Image (cartoon, rainbow, N blue to C red):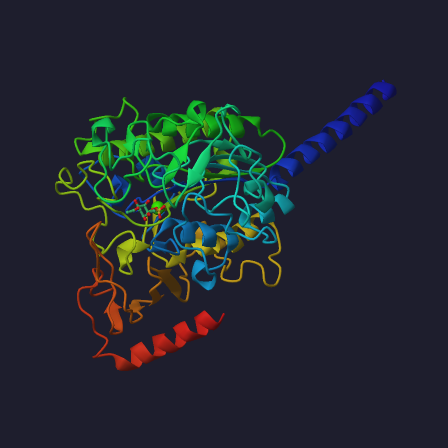
Length: 509
Ligand code: NG6
Ligand code: CA
């Protein structure tokens, strides 16, 4: 009897130790992080942010289950600089050569940088990028698309990559997986040029509009792939060429496979959608479904993608242990280079909400974008946070979450605002810098927005966007005048001086 009791007690001890170890590991397991980085999605484009012209139920659900930010910003009004800042924690305007990258640009992030994913790797994360890259690939010698493409995502902290190398509207129109072109036939090598045609006899959008299923409205009239003319010239790689209609499916498939394979380590997935950038070519199941033409259709496709991703997490039992961030690289644009009826079928929809400008602009709609954070069981559902928040802070905030120390000099512009991100407070950033296409900088402090004087054009004539440039300093009170209609610089000259001085200080670093 004594022996039995002894055995029983021993078993109890063993059991309680293993339960303790188990709960310890669950407790210590760092959360997975998925950053859904959409392209050119405007502040007012989704129903979670008030539009009734189009319904985005999956994105709305994310907001309903999490927190929706009303004053969160990309660092720049265009893609490449926003992504540079996001991944490095450094404002792109501090570094030359970080404007919109041509499709054959070399990697603009130095490989010596500890990037956001590189930092997370140090905390034991497995890291991946799936989707649009647009940060350049290869080194200054120029790259051969037929060989291993280096340096690229692996050299700056990503364990896995599946890329649209630049944007959908730029050559080469091929996917690149782990730095190798997918489905490439070595006997049909890829050549790329951004200076002139490689084969003068090859059709182009300009010479052969009869071959096009979608016509350019400005630019985008060079090599034709899948019935759409692009920016830049390419030849070869026929077996590797993508079909734009499949973008959303393929990116989702790759993300699903990646998520499903992660069994031991926490993971970081930078899921960078092509939607809703041009060319807007939805899969046939979305064509005509929005009533707003291709721009609305790809918006529905984007919403579907978000729902599917959430479903994958649910199926894998990961919802409670995954922080999901949903946002955009810059604001909205209607006509960005293709005649896709976006202007004609816009109706009452206001992709920028109440804000002025749009993609490229120094006005608010350039950088103020949808920003939703959800983490089942950790973030209280259904909240709205109006704190001023910048995507440049994701680096330091996620470092805090992962328990990594940010070293001196690393991510110099990024500050830890994890409590804001998790909606534990709405303490705003003290100030925030916005960058327009021509690198006009604006400064936000509390209610005030200052736009520095600029000789840049007032309007982007191609896209019909007000760029917010003026040779005079501009000051707006965003509480009274969120749409930036009244420049009050003359009436508040002290405020202007104060903000000018702060901007000078920030520029000095
Ligand atoms: C512009 C393109 C535009 C888009 C943009 C980059 C022309 C005329 N316009 O130069 O279509 O590709 O670059 O967009 O070529 S972004 O979202 O990647 O920044
Ligand atoms: Ca963009």
